[in-house]
Length: 186
Image 1 (cartoon, rainbow, N blue to C red):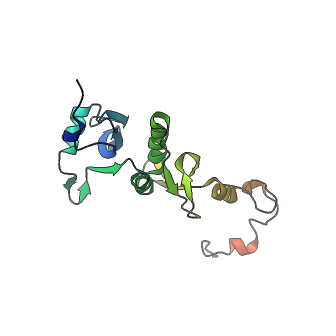
Image 2 (image 1 turned 120 degrees about the vertical axis):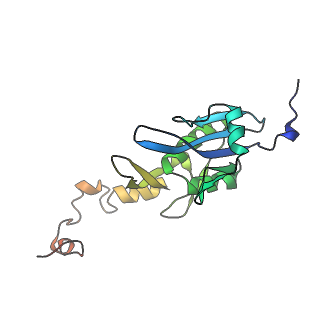
Image 3 (image 1 turned 60 degrees about the vertical axis):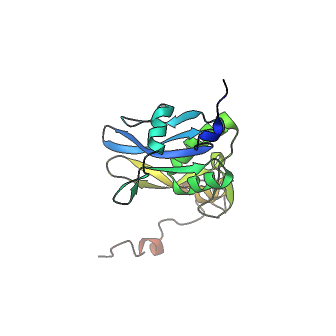
């Protein structure tokens, strides 16, 4: 028996939703896709609200996306170059890499984004996480993805090609640096 795909409104989408948390976390973003054959595939499903099957996914998608107080319970992105680029720009860098890895491994889809430093379009799987930020406690995550060229420039001296912390080309602790705005001279 063949499926009647014309009656299914959800196809070729990536869904980012508030899944269940774990000890110390109330919720975290989870992800699934509904592919071109209208088949459900869980990418990340955690905790008590992690969606593991199509019926749960349909319950979510047929509910109102706004959870109250202006907060979204889920977002959908078309599995197109533009839709995935929007996802890559708007979402947590570590999660973007995990989703991009899944999409490439299972569908051959390459997710692109812009380097946060130079603005070039880059393949997410060839990018580097950058701009780490803490979320309280011991949790922290990368905010941005940058290209390998920008990462190289950040990590290595452009004069001697040595790792910056071992570079002897510059006086890192000279008097001018120590007298900067960050230091109290008293």
